[in-house]
Length: 499
Image (cartoon, rainbow, N blue to C red; front, side, top):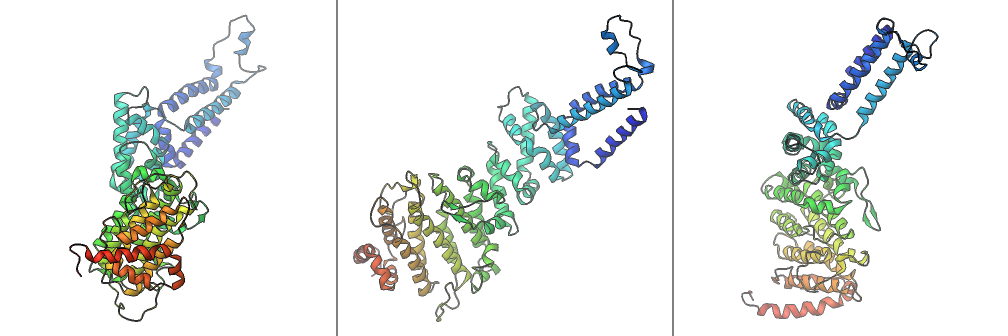
């Protein structure tokens, strides 16, 4: 390689650096010490070879090995060829240095300085590219578990975590634009993750254009093992593909709290008017952009996944009674007293139906659960809580929700009977004999008790709904009629109950 060739090569490197992405240049800066060392050592060697005729001393050794050090005419390697080989070695070492996937704790102060500078310019995309490969190192060092890390390096990692996890505008960008980065950050074992996960899920639930809404819409595939979560559904794949993650992060809370807040703020506003309008094609397309329905659907996906994966916790499916109460507070059917034969008279009615379908689905799933599942073990067949059992918890919630609907004055008798039939059909799908018969007994007990509070003031209306069922369906509910009659006979005698 001649001097002209060397200058051309250096110019090419400068041009490549100018054309490189900011993230790639930033990665190079993180390993600046190694890069500079390699460049200085090999650069001096190349210059030496380029000026070999001027700088090289004469070899005065008599040994044959001395001849290997002599470069030039009629020798094994010319200085220009040696310079070219060193340039190739430099390229290889620099490429290897850049491709190293992980940093060391000593790099963290420099990474912090870089991320801080990028954050000041709101270059959030570059922050994600630069820090994403090193989230594990940052967490390990911040938790004091990185061997050999100094106090300064640990302080840098803690400050870097705060920048990544607690800056609101960065959190919003990551939640909406970088789902893969978001789930990798949520997967980190650190105390700082929990508030970050809540903020991310709250942002997703509050934005109808968020990836969560798109993923819920696209996640409708069902297999014999329950819902399938494809790889492109990043958030659902992370939270429901391994439901332990949803349990660890309490994923139900921000999504369901957002739905309850939305309903609480809707009274007298356009959203209430929207909910009380005719359903039309809401059940086909409109529901997928509705925050309440997406919350119901998210809860359904998460609870079903946890149940089938053997997560021994109710996953806070008890948000369903609160959701039912909030929907009923807003319920207003302008055609309540008319002869209306729509399956769902309003959008609000459809949301109530969706809530009931989710609960009955969790109950009916007992037939598909494998032997040994913790959700097949019942502590009692009464209307009592069992927090580590999802079907039993759903049974308790179902009794509570049906009681609320039956006692709601705003709901038409026809729609009350409709939802009651949905629940009664759920009873018929449960086995009356065998190891799983206790679930059917528990559901009957919960329907009569009205959930865990055992109010029982709904019994007359429940009796009417049962009496209005098709006679074939009533025959399949042979174990309901007797207990319902007995409960109804004893109910008026309870103190404080109006006659």
